[in-house]
Structures are given as C-alpha cells and as structure tokens.
Length: 601
Ligand code: ARG
Image 1 (cartoon, protein in one colour):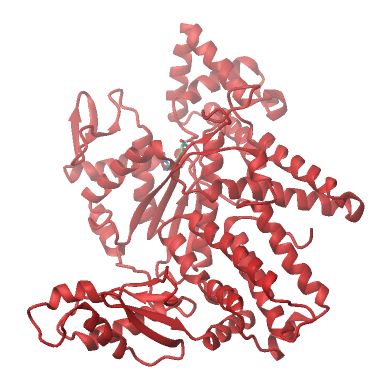
Image 2 (cartoon, helix red, strand yellow):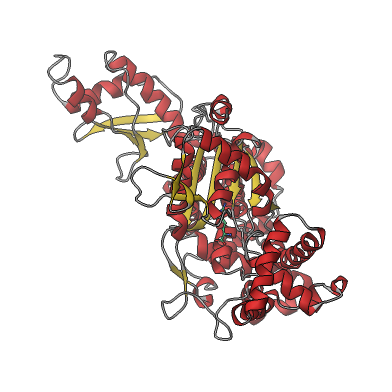
C-alpha cells in the first residue's frame, strides 16, 4: 500500500524549458529547431549550448561533431562536422537576440548576441523587477533538512556550515517559486535523554525550578550527567529505565524531556536569530510514532530481514545492511530517517528532499535513499522526481590544519564566533573614521552585516565538499574574494548613483540603456547570465557557483567603471541605468546568500 500511494504522487516533474531570463535556454530552443531541420532523421538530439570561453562569440553550439558520428555513412548531405556546423548555423531561426554567427574548427557554431537586445532585456528587468529572472523549476514543494543540531550536545561549526548552506539552498528554491519546508531535524530523541532526565531529577528535586539560568550551560550539564552515568552503575540503571519510561509516555518524564529540549532550543535560536535564518523544528521525536507503521509496511514488502538479532534492510552494492531495529528492539538514526523520508514524501508531498550534513553521513543517506528506491517510494532513476539529495560538506579547519576549535575548550561556541567577527568588523569601521560619521546604530548594523556576511561568504564561496580554513583575517579582508570587498563594491555603486543627483526611478522610464563600450557590453552580458547561473547553482545544489558569479560581476563592474566615465559624461543616463542594474543583481545575490547588503561605506 505504501508503494502504491507513493507512486501516485511521483510526477515526473522536470526543470521547465521556457524561461524568459535564461539566455542559454533561449538559445537552446533556437538550436533545437535548427537541429530538427538539419537532421530530421535524428530525433533524440539535445542541443549542447554553452557560454564561449574563447573570443569568437558569447555562446556556442557544440552538436556538430557528435551528430556527425551518428549520421556518418548514412547520408551524403554533409562532408564532415564543419559542414554539419554550417547547416546548423544556416537553419537557425532568425531571432532578435542574435547579431551574428560563425562556424569554427570542427563545426562549433559561435553566436554573438545583439547588444541592442541585451540592453533592452536589462532595461526590462529594471522595470519589471529581478524576480522575472528567477529560475523556473517545475516542482511544487521541497524539504530542506538543515542545521539539525542535537539537544544538550554542542552545536558545532559543522552545524553552522549546515545552517549557512541549507539556508542558501532554501532561498534559491524559494526564489524559484518552490514551496520550501525548512526543516530542523534536531536530535531530540535517543538514549542520552534517560541519563539527562535522571540527572535533572537529582539536581532539581523540585524540578519546577528548572530553567536555563538554573541549569546553566547545557553542554556542561550533559558532561556532568555522562560522568555520573559512567561512574555509578545504580545511576546507569535508573537512566536506562528512564528511557523506557520516557518512550512509554510517562508524564513526568515527558515534561522533563520537554524542559531540556526547551533550554537547548533557546540556545540554538540565538544563533539563528543572529544569522537571520528561519527554520521549522520537526525533530527526531516527531517521527517516532510513525516508525512501527512504516517498518511494518516495509516488512510486508519483504524488505526487512533478520540479521544477528537485529532487523535490517540489505542494500545492493553495500556490504553492511541498514539496521532499522536494533537487537535490543530499539529504533535508531536510520529508523527515524527512513520514516522521516516516508513522511515527507507521503504526508508532506514533497517532490525534492534535500539533506545538508557533513560528508561523513553520505553513506547513511545513500543507504536510506536506496532502501526507499527498493520500497518503490522513490523512482529508480535518481534524476527523476520525487528525488532525495544529500548535500555533503567538508570540515572547517583551524590555522593548524586540524578541526577548528578554540583554545578554551574543545568546542567552538557559535555565538562567540559571530560576536568576534562583528567586533572585528566594527573595529575596522572605527579605524576608517566611521564612528564620527555615523550614528551608533548605523555602525552596529553595518558591523553586523559585514561580520556575519563575511562568515557566511567564506563558507559558501568554496565548493562545499572541500575543507576550508577558518580565518578572521582572510574573511574580513577588504580585498580579494570576500564579502567585505563585495559589500563595499555594492556600496560604492550606490554612492555613484546618489552623487549623480538623478532619480533612477525616473531614468528607468525615460532613459535608454545602450551597451556601446566593450566593457559595458561585457558587464551587460554578465548581468543577463544571472538567471542561468542561479538555476545551475540551485539545480546542482552548489552555492559556490553563485559566489563566483557575484565576484566576477564586481570585477566586470570595476573594469567598466575604470574605463567609462559615468557622472557628467554624455552617456550618463545609460550608464547610471547600468550601475543600477548591477546593484540590483548584486543585492539579489546577497539576498540568496543570506547576506545583508550595505548601502554606504
Ligand atoms: N543531528 C544530526 C547531526 O548532528 C544531523 C541530522 C541531519 N538530518 C537528518 N535527517 N538525519 O549530525
């Protein structure tokens, strides 16, 4: 029954083709038409369109060679790949977006886009808004499972990475009009609670007094209770019984559990609040009541087997099975994740379920997803929807190349980390004389935007799978590929516009944007590549792709600004519009990366 129910929602949603802002897709459509005309006999040919790396054009179509190998010997129409390329070029439908085409080497068709068309598109975006350049992803709902710290244990930098990366992915999907369920899958269930609850009863016989000030540091509380657990067999036994009483739903135990969770939650919320990250908690405990039913379904399908006293699911190609019921009869991390996946697919009707954790958990998710495929919950073809994706990330390292820690303790308190970044960026602003120029509030807000932005950007700019070194000096440098540099670049553009004394809203309506200078054209083209870049970053779950785009954007702007006079020039109106478009796109990038923009420096 489980399987059938899932199949009915497994629509084969695909990334939609029509997209007004996406240059690559628009060109692909033109080439698709040309390919159908050029080789009517070959039906399954997808247009291969990519941005040019060489100077021959802006985009190129790379189909000629592979097409030639398909038709060679079967036709006398062409003499080789270059001739196929020529035909593809000839058969291209006429379009305002293309200025000229040429064929190079073994049939590459190079396209130079019309700068009039490019300019019109940018101006249209300025009027209609940047949301018209949002990717179109034809799925309805996604679950992003991120952050997900464990109650009473430390929330460490790994959770910070998950929080930052997950938030960006959620933002990109939301921008693409996908309904996103931002799930905090907190570790709020498990055997550690027996120990914590008994320790709580010992410390607070009258446990109505329990609150965060009384308990103090939950991590220390966890450590102390663990010590007690390891040292005293009688306590250990009580703790083990407490787990059973908690899971059996005994009110006193449930209440103590809820109180411990609440104290933890308040700690986590401080971090989320600072980072401006919104999450909805559905912790492990939430799925607990559903586990027996889900496992029964899987058993009825014959997927659950007995192995060394445990109940397991065997996965093809992996020599260890997925344990779903431990030999003592208890459930584990996998039972919960399997059930959560079932719930998200069947109850929440999610088309795409994304898990953001360290790469160390890759095998766990691989096994859970494969089990779900065996059960028929997910299609066997992993690129089809509904789909589950694990977004893994590497370690955060300290200066010593080892796992990042502070000297005082072996864990890094995330709030302290954020405070430090803010303090340092504030000091840098004061050094620039901003304390005299700005109000205290402006100083605080800017320091916060820069400090937190710097931490986020330093994390997001690397390919998430690689480890990176945490360095305040690096991330707060105002030169190079940092948030500080980018935020300043944006503020500078805003100040150019302000100093012109012109009303940009008015210019949008009355002025005309022209891309006359080569540096204007290069900047304009890059602006228009925003849509395809966000779509790539979003569909491949790679925030670094967007960071790279943003950095290049500010480089293109710098080149334009140093070679083209804006204020007071004959082209002032057009160039101010180009400045405004750059600022708009930059701000959208910041927004998607969870960074608060700065308007003046
Ligand atoms: N609580 C886990 C940890 O700290 C992360 C949970 C990730 N999400 C999930 N559905 N397993 O490692």
